Length: 115
Image (cartoon, rainbow, N blue to C red; front, side):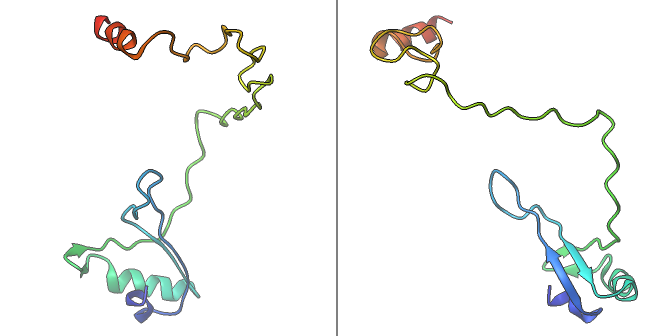
């Protein structure tokens, strides 16, 4: 952000990163100490090349309100039962664990191939 300090005093900078890779997403939010400095940064650096890439510098806009309504709250209910999966515990088979493979690995692979 030292590059942008030529337009004025940079108060804050935020580089969002991708949730999956952790790499920067390719844009940043930079806050200047005054509106005049922000306007100077737009005037000085918009369409300027830096490191082989053309910069696009503009004022941030407020995100529009969601039209599909608020997101439903997530439910993170703790697992129930002693086994943590709602089963009766012990060695008794539970119908609430459909992911538990029954039989050998060879049989499991054969069933997958037949699908």
